[in-house]
Length: 222
Image 1 (cartoon, rainbow, N blue to C red):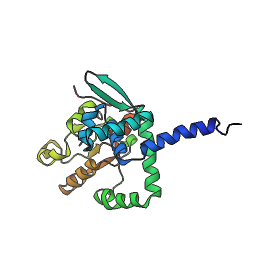
Image 2 (image 1 turned 45 degrees about the vertical axis):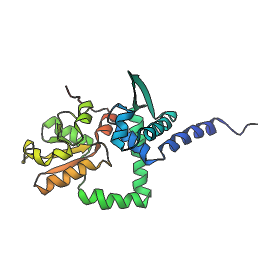
Image 3 (image 1 turned 135 degrees about the vertical axis):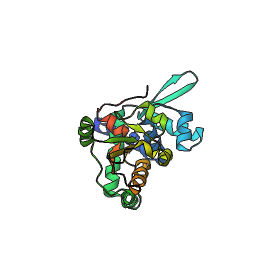
Image 4 (image 1 turned 90 degrees about the horizontal axis):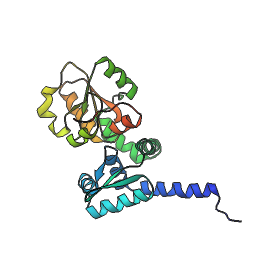
């Protein structure tokens, strides 16, 4: 009698998914793909990897059914294979790491909480505030990521441009900043910089991918 039953077959497939997640470059590539569809060339530049290395990591993710491809002309474009499910998987991995891995907790304390120790704003809370028109939602991602999709009514000021564009923010209006996800440093840096200048500012609890995955409304650039 075979020792490989249906449970073992499922576990074998799940192990392949887990193995595909087991590299920091692949996790970063998934974060970039959570912002929108990207070519290998684009992902290579964003992740600061060689084209060959990027392609190799993407093939591993594809074999695990975490990403999918389509061809447009000469370019092969990658996207997440199920935005909500993959985003939820990465978020769950982060929660386990924050709870159980000492190094993750140390980095969270030394870098992230050192820049923003305040409780972030939940998605539900922000939905209510958007409905009441009570806040300025600030997207600090690059312009091309903002164009693909962003929170309703968000103002896009990439972090590198924040200091020279402070005049676009109302000093007496609360600002809610967000970027690519819970470990994206852009919103943490923006919050720290704005608080130093006297702005009332908080972060969204995660980022654009989690907002979209929750089925909340998004906008794209005209």
